[in-house]
Length: 232
Image 1 (cartoon, rainbow, N blue to C red):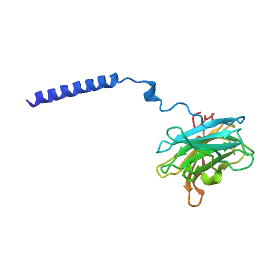
Image 2: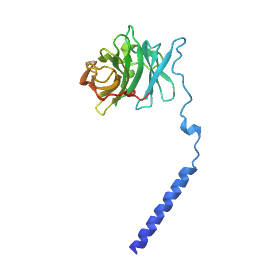
Image 3: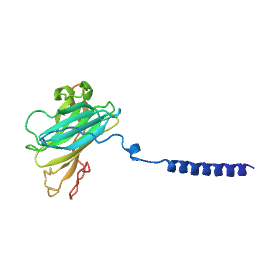
Image 4: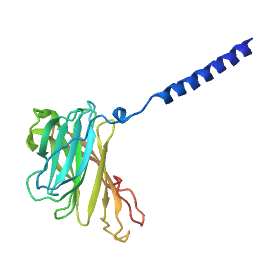
Protein backbone atom coordinates (compact mmCIF):
# COMPACT_ATOMS: atom_id res chain seq x y z
CA UNK A 1 0.00 0.00 0.00
CA UNK A 2 2.79 2.42 0.96
CA UNK A 3 4.62 1.61 -2.27
CA UNK A 4 1.45 2.34 -4.28
CA UNK A 5 0.98 5.71 -2.51
CA UNK A 6 4.64 6.52 -3.11
CA UNK A 7 4.28 5.68 -6.82
CA UNK A 8 1.19 7.85 -7.12
CA UNK A 9 2.95 10.72 -5.36
CA UNK A 10 5.92 10.51 -7.72
CA UNK A 11 3.60 10.41 -10.71
CA UNK A 12 1.73 13.47 -9.43
CA UNK A 13 5.00 15.36 -8.94
CA UNK A 14 6.09 14.51 -12.46
CA UNK A 15 2.78 15.70 -13.91
CA UNK A 16 2.94 18.95 -11.94
CA UNK A 17 6.53 19.46 -13.08
CA UNK A 18 5.55 19.01 -16.74
CA UNK A 19 2.55 21.31 -16.38
CA UNK A 20 4.69 23.99 -14.75
CA UNK A 21 7.17 23.78 -17.61
CA UNK A 22 4.39 24.11 -20.16
CA UNK A 23 2.92 27.12 -18.37
CA UNK A 24 6.30 28.84 -18.19
CA UNK A 25 7.01 28.07 -21.82
CA UNK A 26 3.63 29.49 -22.86
CA UNK A 27 4.35 32.95 -21.34
CA UNK A 28 5.10 35.27 -24.27
CA UNK A 29 8.35 37.22 -24.09
CA UNK A 30 8.55 40.57 -25.80
CA UNK A 31 10.92 43.49 -25.87
CA UNK A 32 8.75 45.30 -23.31
CA UNK A 33 9.48 42.62 -20.69
CA UNK A 34 13.23 42.91 -21.22
CA UNK A 35 13.93 46.59 -21.90
CA UNK A 36 13.11 48.74 -18.85
CA UNK A 37 13.71 52.15 -20.43
CA UNK A 38 14.58 53.61 -23.77
CA UNK A 39 18.18 54.68 -24.35
CA UNK A 40 19.00 57.68 -22.17
CA UNK A 41 21.53 60.38 -23.04
CA UNK A 42 23.77 60.87 -20.03
CA UNK A 43 25.49 64.02 -21.22
CA UNK A 44 25.90 66.21 -24.27
CA UNK A 45 29.52 67.25 -24.16
CA UNK A 46 29.28 69.35 -27.30
CA UNK A 47 32.72 69.54 -28.85
CA UNK A 48 34.26 67.66 -25.93
CA UNK A 49 35.24 64.03 -26.35
CA UNK A 50 33.33 62.01 -23.74
CA UNK A 51 34.32 58.33 -23.71
CA UNK A 52 35.48 55.31 -21.66
CA UNK A 53 32.34 55.23 -19.50
CA UNK A 54 31.86 52.86 -16.54
CA UNK A 55 28.44 52.23 -14.96
CA UNK A 56 27.10 50.78 -11.70
CA UNK A 57 23.68 50.66 -9.99
CA UNK A 58 23.08 51.11 -6.25
CA UNK A 59 20.63 49.31 -3.95
CA UNK A 60 17.81 51.69 -4.92
CA UNK A 61 18.32 51.17 -8.64
CA UNK A 62 19.95 54.57 -9.19
CA UNK A 63 22.57 54.56 -11.94
CA UNK A 64 26.04 56.03 -11.42
CA UNK A 65 28.26 56.78 -14.42
CA UNK A 66 31.86 57.95 -14.71
CA UNK A 67 33.67 58.78 -17.93
CA UNK A 68 36.67 60.65 -19.29
CA UNK A 69 36.37 64.03 -20.98
CA UNK A 70 39.09 64.68 -23.54
CA UNK A 71 41.10 62.19 -21.42
CA UNK A 72 41.98 65.18 -19.22
CA UNK A 73 39.45 64.80 -16.42
CA UNK A 74 37.01 62.32 -14.92
CA UNK A 75 33.31 63.19 -14.82
CA UNK A 76 30.40 61.73 -12.84
CA UNK A 77 26.62 61.71 -13.23
CA UNK A 78 23.73 60.06 -11.35
CA UNK A 79 20.37 59.02 -12.76
CA UNK A 80 17.21 57.69 -11.14
CA UNK A 81 15.88 54.22 -12.04
CA UNK A 82 13.56 55.98 -14.54
CA UNK A 83 16.45 57.69 -16.28
CA UNK A 84 15.92 61.12 -14.74
CA UNK A 85 19.13 63.07 -14.13
CA UNK A 86 19.71 63.56 -10.41
CA UNK A 87 23.27 64.90 -10.65
CA UNK A 88 24.40 66.28 -13.97
CA UNK A 89 27.95 65.95 -15.33
CA UNK A 90 30.34 66.87 -12.52
CA UNK A 91 34.13 66.91 -12.69
CA UNK A 92 35.51 64.71 -9.90
CA UNK A 93 39.25 64.86 -10.62
CA UNK A 94 41.25 67.63 -9.00
CA UNK A 95 42.46 70.64 -10.93
CA UNK A 96 45.72 70.22 -12.82
CA UNK A 97 47.15 68.34 -15.76
CA UNK A 98 45.96 64.75 -16.10
CA UNK A 99 45.74 62.01 -18.69
CA UNK A 100 42.79 59.99 -17.44
CA UNK A 101 42.29 56.49 -18.84
CA UNK A 102 40.04 53.48 -18.26
CA UNK A 103 38.01 54.28 -15.12
CA UNK A 104 36.20 51.55 -13.21
CA UNK A 105 33.42 51.97 -10.65
CA UNK A 106 31.83 50.02 -7.77
CA UNK A 107 29.25 50.64 -5.06
CA UNK A 108 29.46 49.53 -1.41
CA UNK A 109 26.78 48.42 1.07
CA UNK A 110 26.00 52.03 2.01
CA UNK A 111 25.68 53.10 -1.64
CA UNK A 112 28.91 55.06 -1.62
CA UNK A 113 30.64 55.14 -4.97
CA UNK A 114 34.26 54.01 -5.41
CA UNK A 115 36.25 54.83 -8.55
CA UNK A 116 39.70 53.92 -9.86
CA UNK A 117 41.47 55.07 -13.00
CA UNK A 118 44.91 55.38 -14.57
CA UNK A 119 46.57 58.79 -14.76
CA UNK A 120 49.14 58.58 -17.53
CA UNK A 121 50.54 62.08 -17.09
CA UNK A 122 54.21 61.89 -16.13
CA UNK A 123 54.90 58.70 -14.18
CA UNK A 124 51.80 56.57 -14.68
CA UNK A 125 49.65 56.28 -11.54
CA UNK A 126 46.71 54.20 -10.41
CA UNK A 127 44.26 56.58 -8.73
CA UNK A 128 41.30 56.12 -6.38
CA UNK A 129 38.49 58.31 -5.09
CA UNK A 130 35.23 57.77 -3.18
CA UNK A 131 32.00 59.69 -3.78
CA UNK A 132 28.99 60.27 -1.54
CA UNK A 133 26.40 61.53 -4.02
CA UNK A 134 23.79 61.88 -1.27
CA UNK A 135 25.53 65.08 -0.19
CA UNK A 136 24.26 66.78 -3.37
CA UNK A 137 20.76 68.31 -3.71
CA UNK A 138 19.92 65.87 -6.55
CA UNK A 139 18.01 68.55 -8.40
CA UNK A 140 19.26 67.59 -11.85
CA UNK A 141 22.04 70.17 -11.79
CA UNK A 142 25.79 69.62 -11.76
CA UNK A 143 27.36 69.41 -8.32
CA UNK A 144 30.94 70.18 -7.27
CA UNK A 145 33.88 67.90 -6.58
CA UNK A 146 34.21 69.20 -3.04
CA UNK A 147 30.52 68.58 -2.31
CA UNK A 148 30.23 64.93 -3.30
CA UNK A 149 33.79 63.71 -2.73
CA UNK A 150 34.13 61.58 0.41
CA UNK A 151 37.80 60.64 -0.14
CA UNK A 152 39.90 62.84 -2.38
CA UNK A 153 42.01 61.62 -5.30
CA UNK A 154 44.49 59.15 -3.82
CA UNK A 155 47.54 57.55 -5.43
CA UNK A 156 47.44 53.76 -5.10
CA UNK A 157 50.65 53.26 -7.07
CA UNK A 158 52.98 55.55 -9.04
CA UNK A 159 56.52 54.70 -10.11
CA UNK A 160 58.60 54.17 -13.25
CA UNK A 161 57.25 52.27 -16.27
CA UNK A 162 53.69 51.89 -17.53
CA UNK A 163 50.52 50.87 -15.68
CA UNK A 164 46.88 50.93 -16.80
CA UNK A 165 43.53 49.08 -16.88
CA UNK A 166 42.63 49.22 -13.18
CA UNK A 167 39.60 47.33 -11.85
CA UNK A 168 38.10 47.25 -8.38
CA UNK A 169 35.59 45.40 -6.22
CA UNK A 170 34.17 45.83 -2.71
CA UNK A 171 34.02 43.04 -0.12
CA UNK A 172 31.48 42.46 2.68
CA UNK A 173 33.48 44.73 5.02
CA UNK A 174 33.52 47.52 2.42
CA UNK A 175 37.25 47.12 1.86
CA UNK A 176 38.37 47.96 -1.67
CA UNK A 177 40.34 45.48 -3.78
CA UNK A 178 42.17 46.92 -6.78
CA UNK A 179 44.02 45.15 -9.60
CA UNK A 180 45.81 46.61 -12.60
CA UNK A 181 48.21 45.83 -15.41
CA UNK A 182 51.76 46.98 -14.68
CA UNK A 183 55.07 46.91 -16.55
CA UNK A 184 57.14 47.59 -13.44
CA UNK A 185 60.00 45.08 -13.34
CA UNK A 186 62.77 46.37 -11.09
CA UNK A 187 65.03 43.36 -11.63
CA UNK A 188 64.11 42.81 -15.30
CA UNK A 189 63.00 39.25 -14.64
CA UNK A 190 59.99 39.25 -16.94
CA UNK A 191 61.49 40.79 -20.12
CA UNK A 192 59.24 43.87 -19.98
CA UNK A 193 56.10 41.76 -20.17
CA UNK A 194 53.16 43.34 -18.26
CA UNK A 195 52.07 41.70 -15.04
CA UNK A 196 49.00 41.96 -12.82
CA UNK A 197 49.37 43.76 -9.49
CA UNK A 198 46.98 43.94 -6.54
CA UNK A 199 46.35 46.27 -3.63
CA UNK A 200 43.76 46.28 -0.82
CA UNK A 201 42.69 49.46 0.95
CA UNK A 202 40.30 50.32 3.75
CA UNK A 203 38.47 53.62 3.24
CA UNK A 204 38.49 55.84 6.33
CA UNK A 205 35.55 58.12 5.65
CA UNK A 206 35.90 59.89 9.01
CA UNK A 207 39.46 60.84 8.18
CA UNK A 208 38.71 61.24 4.44
CA UNK A 209 41.67 59.01 3.65
CA UNK A 210 42.54 55.36 3.02
CA UNK A 211 44.41 52.78 5.07
CA UNK A 212 46.56 50.44 2.97
CA UNK A 213 46.03 46.84 4.07
CA UNK A 214 48.02 45.22 1.24
CA UNK A 215 50.45 47.36 -0.73
CA UNK A 216 51.15 46.68 -4.40
CA UNK A 217 51.56 42.91 -4.73
CA UNK A 218 52.59 40.99 -7.83
CA UNK A 219 49.99 38.32 -8.63
CA UNK A 220 51.50 36.86 -11.82
CA UNK A 221 55.26 36.28 -11.34
CA UNK A 222 55.82 34.40 -14.60
CA UNK A 223 57.07 35.36 -18.04
CA UNK A 224 54.34 36.11 -20.54
CA UNK A 225 51.96 38.90 -21.51
CA UNK A 226 49.10 39.37 -19.01
CA UNK A 227 45.79 40.71 -20.28
CA UNK A 228 43.68 43.49 -18.86
CA UNK A 229 42.36 42.40 -15.44
CA UNK A 230 39.07 44.22 -16.00
CA UNK A 231 38.46 42.21 -19.16
CA UNK A 232 38.05 44.99 -21.69
